[in-house]
Length: 197
Image 1 (cartoon, one colour):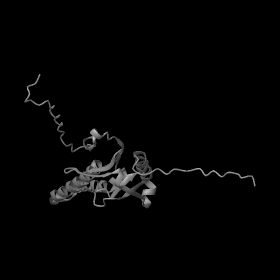
Image 2: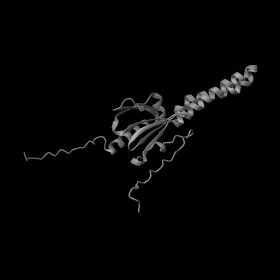
Image 3: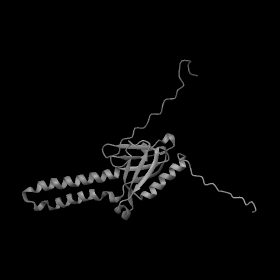
């Protein structure tokens, strides 16, 4: 039996320190497990978003292949080729690390390679979702989501390059309806009684 001056408090569980991964987005780290938050859908950038950065890589490799013909200035071509390739590869990696996540409680975006940025909007603050699908988006089935929310100064105003944007928009709307944040439209049957005339 503890003495009268001792406390029966249980020590708080030490949170497990997880190191940041620079190679993969760590979505689980940002979930509110104590509140029962689960991922409904995690959206990565579609391959079409990497076309521009892949162009930088291709140009860099082409310059590296041509540096043998440069004579004494080969080292300059090597630096330019390596630089262009590095820029393209870093941009491709940044696209890989950029994730948009829909959970049962909120939507959030995690992005950044060396610095992580997390922007969150609770489901109850989302007022409207607009899907913008450019011409190339209709061909390759990607688009951009624009959120109207009660708090306009967040990092989730526009999410660019979303695969199958209309399905994602529909999924977010379903999650919002199922969470009970917005009232569900109830259809009432109108009964007309025949008075015999």
